[in-house]
Length: 234
Image 1 (cartoon, rainbow, N blue to C red):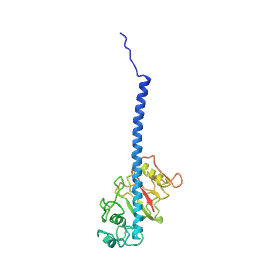
Image 2: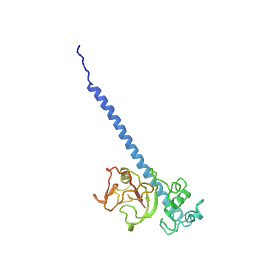
Image 3: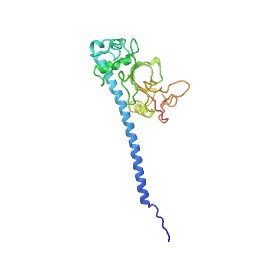
């Protein structure tokens, strides 16, 4: 008795290939949607804090954190940080209290951001908002962004670390020039409560941003670094 083995027909193989293609397409599309959502979230947080920053300045003629009459004009201020007041010197700095932490209490209790934050001597979940990766933001006057030039200090909002490089690079492309060392959105080594972010300068090349290459450097979007951060410069 002769046995005949029957293989797959071309139509059956084509159907299998179509199904595999649809599955792969769905996975890739899902990853793309997740990435897009994270990018939009980061941009939304930055836009919200910038609007709050300028709204506070417009109402009180002072910067949040630096405002030296907050205890008189904002309800329910705590007294832990300088009695609730900054030093009024025109910048969000670290003297005589950590004004970068006090800024969040000023903004929240004046109604410019959601949530309620109470200043303390250190950052915590009760004092400081976080990015989508649960790392603290920072609103401050310093030069810890871009090439970390102390002579180019400005007010800026740090995103905090633990952001994948491909996400931070896409944020830059959508809201600025796509370069980590120029424009209004730049690379920052500020780590918040995340693991230490790669540093700019020194002997080792950073994993997030490359100081060489095209003018103003470039994001290392293909290396898979998961611990990057940026800063919105005002």
